Length: 428
Image (cartoon, rainbow, N blue to C red; front, side, top):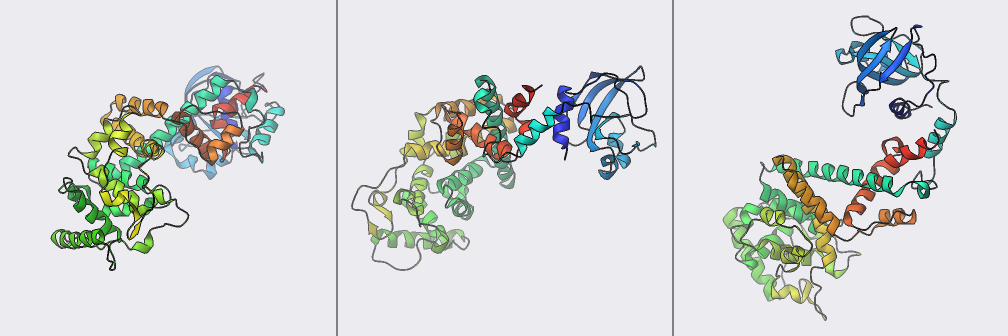
């Protein structure tokens, strides 16, 4: 079945025979300007210029598979579609009207589009490959691949920034609280992300900032609210934290903590145990400068160590991955890879969101520069892309690849992808 997305492509690039083009009403149609594709609500192409029966019309163009879709979509009762000057369809099975009852000129494209073009499109969208166009990728110009990766990356950054702004609004536009919650979530990585985010809600940044000069108190608050101080043990440090948490819990009337069983340890390396990550988070938070301000200052790779890798944990966590079990070897420090992961998934989205809220492009540029300075990520999606001759050189590339794969390849949105469009255009 013909798809509207394909008809948008055909109209936008005018890949149809316009010889002797007549409307269904029998009037001559001459396309002077196709208009601009509209990504919001309303007619599909805006600002078109069409000569109909020798009269110059300016307005919008609406595209459907069948003319009857006009009524099915409710346009005949929607005044937003009264300025449509041309109805472009694959099959003209009905005359359509504006809200005032006037007829809308309609042209049908069936029989005017080269047969090989819809066939090539169908082969793309029906492909069983993980990347629909993978057999054609080697023939696509590298500059065009690069342009699409950049476009996909920026789309991903703005998408992530919207998530940041949503959290910001829930926090009453408090940037420090928002940065803290998102950073906490990232410290849980995929396995314990939700638990860390909930922990940050149970121990607000406003509360922690009263104790950032006392690492033990910050640890007591975080471990206590995480539920890791339940039960009894001979571990002296555990006992001290539990006592401190009880005192602070009463003082601040803290909410009911999480339970230890909510945290996941299975199939995690000790370096990723949530207990150690909480200790490392406490070390990062114990700083006189506000968290959000420090994140905004990250401009290059060398500053990652200052904020994340040099955040001192207590001596206890230099010998333990979890309570009551002393490690026989030195405990792993916060690695560069983990620090880069946090920059990609927390710092960069915060920078972009901050730039959008303040309408300052410099923060968005800073975010892009940071991604360009970081090493490429390595995951399943990136490996698929590499297998298809798309080799990343930075985190900017890999963020673009993730967006390209998730939002274009999997969803078969080939006509919204510059690479897919280039492949189809080569057939014309």
